[in-house]
Image 1 (cartoon, rainbow, N blue to C red):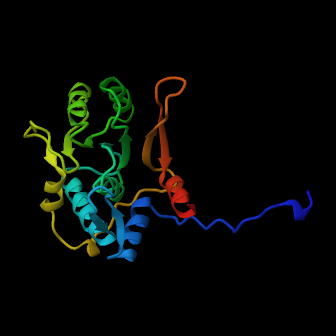
Image 2: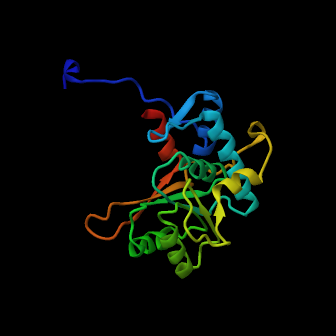
Image 3: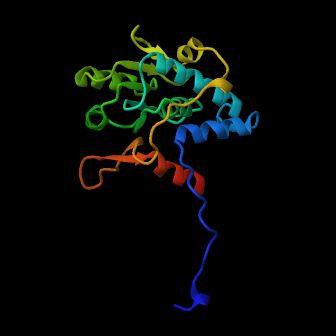
Length: 217
């Protein structure tokens, strides 16, 4: 093919040999006090530094609870300012993040959770009842945490709050070091396929997969 008929872009950036947790932690440190996200309804903002401090505190508490490499952490919540916090914390501790569609029925949630079998789940007030019901049947969930600003009418004493995880651990984020796992072979995400031709499947993404996406978009 003639060279003049070929459209070429810039060379793709090299993918660093690191984990997604290490990469995102450094980016949060770099951007500091700049605004990271805004709640369009309330106008509330979060800076990169605020996200850094909260996510590191959650990660430290997760480690105290025994969550680490090889464990799966589920998240069943609609979008909110808090959604990114357990995701980042999960990456920091080297665990696998498994997000679930908050619109899933209890039956759909049972199928998705039976694939990834999370040891810990962060659920919103909208999904907490369904998650709790499924967790009781599967028997794999050891920790259930309420995420978001809304509180259900009746909250079980066994359910932790995200704010409690944030306040339980202190210490500067500057001294925090994420857990290391092999970015080439270790899974960082289990995503559920759409299930167009059948039930959803669990799709594993490695740290390198996700890093490739992060640095090229």
